[in-house]
Length: 502
DNA sequence: TCTGGGGTCCTTAGCCGG
DNA sequence: TCTGCCGGCTAAGGACCC
Image (cartoon, rainbow, N blue to C red; front, side, top):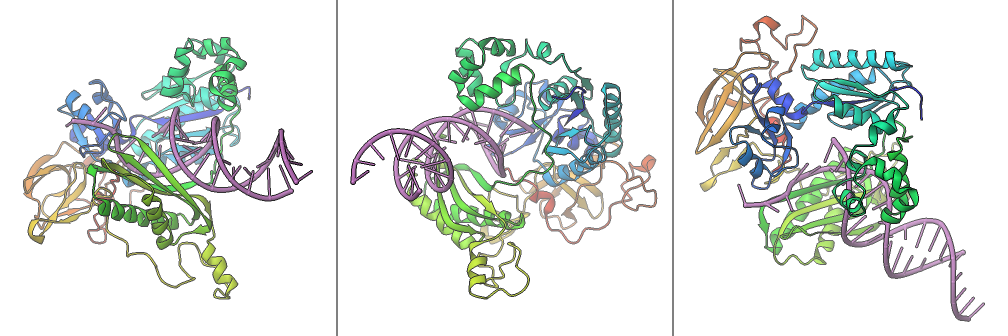
């Protein structure tokens, strides 16, 4: 355990919702809920205004709508959030080589490793400057926790929320944790919390009191020992910059349960293909294929099969997944299917066979390329599945193409400029024309197939510092829609394709 | 209108070989 | 040869995190 509070935890405040509010002036100060909008969607992030109604993440969307019927409900735009996240991570990277991202909106930084801070005063100064830089670069706020360990730094950033900084002096950890709930400790979730509660343990002080032996008896060796140490404020986990990926998986929850065995089989194959695409794009292959099935009653089972060697061949993965499905009873209906690959490697069995056969000369192929066969054995990349990334165009009744517009999606109109989809239905789509840092824009309604309306890329939240940059108008003219980002190439629908929540 | 998606880690159990 | 033990691997499930 170090003696100075040089571990920094950054947590962006209500990140997805705050990013949407920053991008859409009409949503500032309003309750905003981001998440899956389908019948089985859940809340990913609620703005602080929405939280006042009791809405929180992981809550079923239907419940959120009952609590906050007047909130704005938007689908997540992950590529937009990712671009903001990259800006933030760059700021963190300037502080230290040891940055451990936990998600798009959260990270640990080891300030000592970067020489950025040595004591409480310098750490606090770094934290405050970081918060100011984040605000300047992204227009969003983040909360910073500083402490001598990861766990306490995280507790600190939680206390700093929203838009604050809290530093915990080393030596005060045990007193700080004492009265807090056992749920404060990482790894203690609902199940363990309930287990402990039944044993009469609800606070960290009571964990310490119970003693290591009792905790091991209650929770098993690994968890018991670590929980006791954590409750004492001892946390030696280092900040780890690079983590190897261990598995790749995709899954879909269907709007209504699937009963037809053939349809289930087709969905499994579709998921297997999607999974392999992800596997390849990450430069991996894998040995163990996992099928996941969630049944009508929410019971979940997994079946797995380990191959002789790693593969990234869609046919191999698809067939393995189909074999696993054979052994699963799906009567009653299926609400979720998933396909995953674990036991990752950066080579494939096929590579070896090819090498043995002398097929590969010179440069070894990357796993993404199928050099062994020269062909993509899988089906051509599909635009998107029905409940996966939202396709821009769906086949309508009678075969006519019907454009799909998701709430929150960025669009551009030939006449009215950039805006976002406020809602759509019965052949109409409502668009609000406004830009980040501009004034609240006007709303107009179009036919869904209006030829002037196209999906577009998100606009940057903050004008780039370079005044010569043509991307953004000068700040004081930002309410004018006259200046727009450079033309994108075509309408690839990536604005809508962000969403992986059905 | 109940309950997403993408991960990690741990535990338990059975099997196999030394 | 039989038995016990141990480690490693595989499979399945569960808990947890964001």
